[in-house]
Image 1 (cartoon, rainbow, N blue to C red):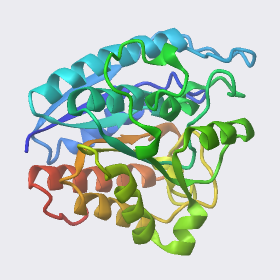
Image 2 (image 1 turned 180 degrees about the vertical axis):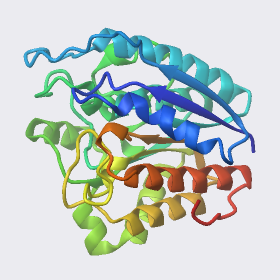
Image 3 (image 1 turned 90 degrees about the horizontal axis):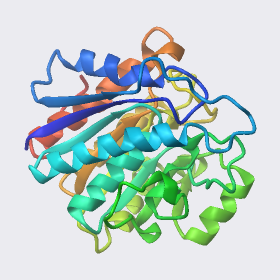
Length: 299
């Protein structure tokens, strides 16, 4: 199957700089074996990000503009039967990728591998950082301003699963409760095992849907293992568990219709540790898609 990598070089959704450089670095690394097509979107070089603590809609206009262009390109290429692989960038770029997938594929589910649930709204966010709002936006739970470009189906909350959460804002918890999404914490992974949790996530997200969007945030890992992210959260999963998750995604690759890998921040990495993990994940995924699900060893 032909793939298309979309680089989404934006860190407009977070007050920490650097994640906009992640796609550039990873796409350059991938040139050693990836011969497929790619397309890059990069935030304006001289953009001035909002850092005002009282601004609870930081860079809203700029993010919506960036995601509009990304969304339109992804919809066009998916209609041409490309399998989209998004490399971010902060997690706000996944608003474009997930909704583009829903636009083209119709009724799909989503599995959100992340230390955060990203289920804030403009009414509940404490920081105003929009990378804390994307999953709610994708589900159509308020935040209309962040998806004006989208005229298709949102992804149903009942078909939405978060895996690996361990940092949830107090007000965000009410949003989660009322929306009806399923959340598996890092503790659930440790108690039940990676395989049990991921298999259950696929059952929920894949029930009576036409496919599943995967969004994999590198802050899922413990920062002792993968320090190169903007908002690290301790007590995360190990590298072995991260790779096992990806192996299980590959096992279900025929159900997967789109894939994100986000939040690599090279300015925060140490000895390229996070970069290498990201490359391993991407290499496995790309080769499995190109080989129709055949498992490929670590890059």
